[in-house]
Image 1 (tube, rainbow, N blue to C red):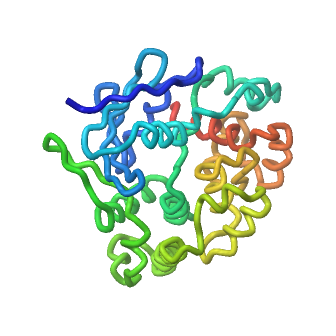
Image 2: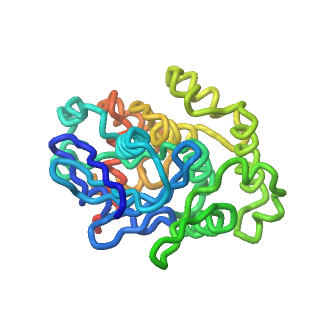
Length: 289
């Protein structure tokens, strides 16, 4: 029998809405209302199965060993469960208020692993989402580790230590450009050698986070804001140049063209200090069709 943990969630948390769009990623599997994920917690590799529970999330530890505190901390971080969204829900901005009513209870799916967040952002630079998922899948299956359980393989994102020693040439058959291959290897080296750590970034103000991130080769303003939003929990982060955000606003507002970065920044002033959640809710409209 698997070890089972119960994690309390906010009253308006919507687990079904959370997992509905997660099955397209190589790192997640969604079946029969359950979400499966292989992940490293400290020194342990574990396989988690999450489902809606009585007033919270039921987490079954299907493989590996981990303390209940480590599991709870990871899940709460992953689904942003400790954030008070009352300020976001109170926004009266005409762009975002209808989306708050539509998606209320939807929490951000964060990326607690800084290396994963940076790699995914780099892979997604200047390509469409379908192609980015294809490259990510190839990268994970080439460099990552898997847990096999009941005849099914569950992939875990590569550790930076496993990537740091690679030559860029080995990633190019996975449809990486040479430059992106160099970026993900270089970032792995920064983390593996202790020069870059999520814990250190979390202790910085947002402006300092942005400076540290954009000093890394391959990380520009868009990538930094994405990582600040998804991995560091910085709610004022705004990836204004994101094509998905531009398309979401175009569709949501019925515009004849995509808004410019300057126009998005002007709109986003009304979303402060919740630009990240506003962006996340706008992104959600793209999968509603």
